[in-house]
Image 1: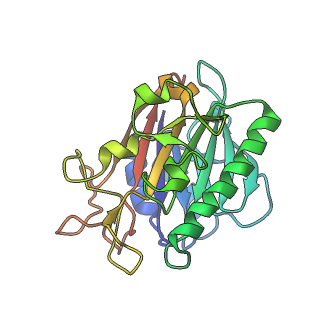
Image 2: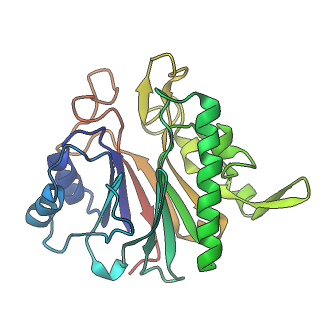
Length: 271
């Protein structure tokens, strides 16, 4: 299963999304801030240009959507199960080892919130997510989205955040203990894509504002709960395809399209 996540930065990127879906043979398309596309436009274009089987996941709450989720096969059972501030949880069916949950997160933005508040949001989001996991008696979770944090920030890597580690060998230990309390490990593969020695760009967004201390940032991330390491097959930052180019002449995200590069997460064990 190939899953696209893309913060399109309020631009109508429908044409690019359809081309990506065709070229990359995407199974699930997840968009954040797809506000400029008219209601139903993206779905209609996916159905007419890519596959008539595309559908939009049912919505849990009546509030305006921060995320839009489109699937190519209804057997995947894509359905929103919970909605919190800047976070939605969806159910995915079809994995040979059982259903999984995907928490979509859009962290507090650096233009309006300093790093302490952005880390603090993740503590709040984690509490909401854990409450839902307890209610459905499952830990089979993938977290995906625009975190507006880097992999090394405490909201992501800290023990009181998502406790997301860069190493599978560490994550296979399942938990680490802090003040006599165990905390589940998540695997964060985005560490391996940071910097010049990675196979792609140094990050997913480039920011030189007062909040962009590093220039390149890895704000778009995927975290894998330790129980799902066996179904994770990789993640890629997409800068171009055979027909598309999402970067400027100097390799930065082309803001005329989006200030974020899309990422594609591949999961195995789905029929």
